[in-house]
Image (cartoon, rainbow, N blue to C red; front, side, top):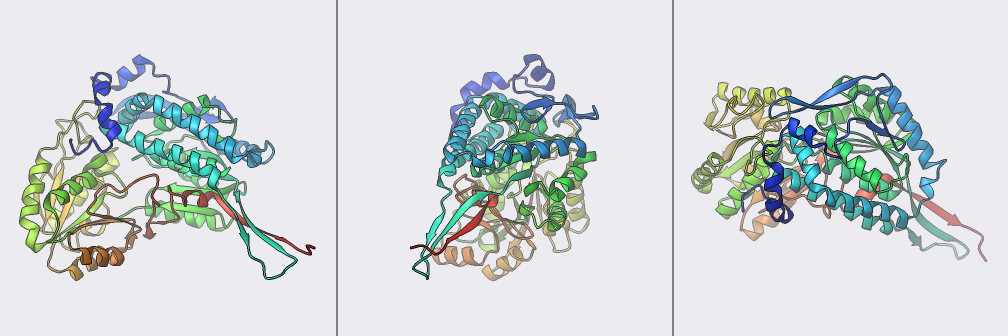
Length: 518
């Protein structure tokens, strides 16, 4: 099975997918009038334009053609959404809804998401550029959070606490915090919304979603299906905006007294700013921020598994994932064999329009990202690194394509060594000892994910404890799952998403003490 058929369900859908994805383009999408393709935001159960009447274009990164326009909202629109979500939570009684009712809504949403997976994938591929197989894989992953939290909604348990006094009864109960503001990124426009929104709604919160300006159409498609699933008005709201208004919208979400929680996935720099803005109100905040993931290949590693893991971890979504391997540390004894096998695999990657069957590498999301990746590679070259393959733009495919790249002879004064590239670039660092590898791997303030390959059991347990990351793949390059607690340490964020802990971000514990009992 090709590397990028990451989920079993993707493979099962390939036969159906082939006919659907041939010659997909912006023009084809519009002509086919996909019922999930929306051009308005969603507030209080209504599809609305911006109060200012302003709009912005959404483009296909494959050819930079316009897919459509959506409202360019500002703080006036957001205030309306905040008021709606606040009133729905309190005045309209969403906070008193039962866990069974919320679970039923989420299950119905999950059903609608599954039924419409092909259409969602076509929209996602068109606005993000990722290969259609990866879009379908993300939908499987994203939908799993809706299913998971539909089940977890009925397991938000409290506690009976043994009391030191005979005439008292002590209880701990969990209650929803209120309105949750969810700010999501462009690289996983489906899964980052469902992972946050499903948890918040399961807990009993109302939500306001601010999707990334590059990929709002996927968010609106999910919202359309939530509407069809029967979500009450005001429970789920979506505010779209261009980059021009993004900062002011984020600040208002953080500073509004009516918003109780913020969840953000994105860069560490923006995360720090939101953290500061939330401080004035001591607001609940969850942050999933940038990484600088090490990928360590020890001499004892299974070579085939290590190369497979490297390809999966690095080139999914053209390297534009927060847990993508960033620094590849390869031990002396296996270095030459690993490099030879890796180079062979990288050269086989199929580059092109992600809507075409079999394509594994699509474009970068926008010109800013293309410039960043190009500058990182050029910086390394100028400082003495060797570009083994790639290292250049591919205008024959489109203006936003960058070749899958391998760079060796890295030094610690290079940007590729110290910063997250967020692109299809493998940076190789050669090492001699385990201690040396751990020193390099842990020599960063980022600690989201890490990977290592070894068949030495003692080393596996030792390195697992010493590697400073919130998530670690041991002999595995794909670690995400709805059942797992997703999150980092250091400057890579606070809080966890997914798993049984995901709901904790949206509830608080209330202590009840019943005294003077007879």
